[in-house]
Length: 188
Image 1 (cartoon, rainbow, N blue to C red):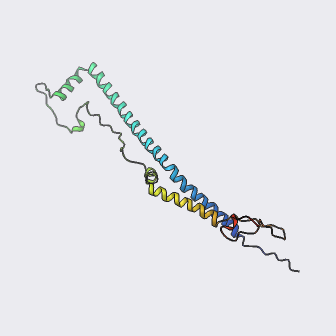
Image 2 (cartoon, rainbow, N blue to C red; image 1 turned 135 degrees about the vertical axis):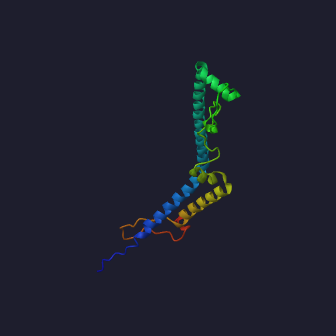
Image 3 (tube, one colour; image 1 turned 60 degrees about the vertical axis):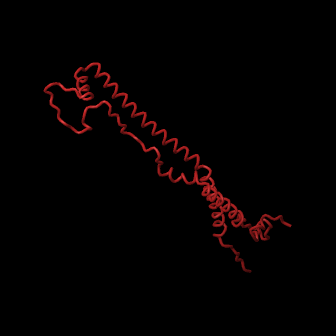
């Protein structure tokens, strides 16, 4: 009396199941890349515009603060008014000596160069990575086709594995399919 039990390859059921689920995840990832990339690109552009406008607002606030100081100085300090008139109109007092200095060191209330400027057309690195998937229709179509083919492959060639029964007689549910289309046929 020989009590040896034949055991099938124990790696086949879980590797097939793993391959099936990985194929499904790949198809979902490809579809979501195509479906969500235009929305993500719009979000990135809106975020970039928001930050650029915030930087511009901060620059304008600094400019308003500077001009408020100039208005206060014009109202209270006559010496400042004289210096400003001499700079703007080239007026000099007799005997006044001028020392030439670099342009960025000269007194001027009109220099309001915004120091905080963002490039208008630049996208962050992830925006540049998303851009082709959002606007290139050929690439989007190819990815959708690949996603559909991956789904077809997963359902046709990676069938779900049947659990091994402890019964002595195999039932029809435990017999593995004989081909890719056999599992979609009705049992006779």
